[in-house]
Length: 163
Image: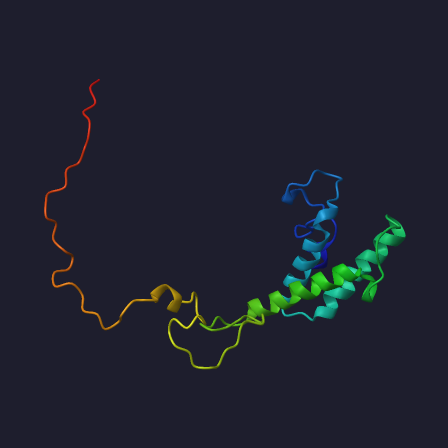
């Protein structure tokens, strides 16, 4: 992972031409995405989150001391607070992606939990149905012939194209 995420590596989103970035360029807008991606790969690989934080912080401290003195290292391990949050978010998603799929798995994200029994159409599902059924009598019998027959043939208006 060190080789892949170090500047110029294939997974380094801020500089690698693989992502359409010109040579010797740096895309500052990709900082958060790169931290999230680094955390995701660390979590998906089953490695501890602290390893991603330490590696990202080491990279930030080296960059600050060698290349750019304006690099923010105010967070833990030498990360910026934003980098730290993005690594954590990506890591949680990577760990969740390692879980076996299940029909009702929220994959680590806090989904809505409602253990109370409900009635179809009570509004707790996709859409509230009761309001759309106002005035409909469920005991009403359907028409005797369904679909109702047409009383006259349907005429279609058309034109004949001549070339």
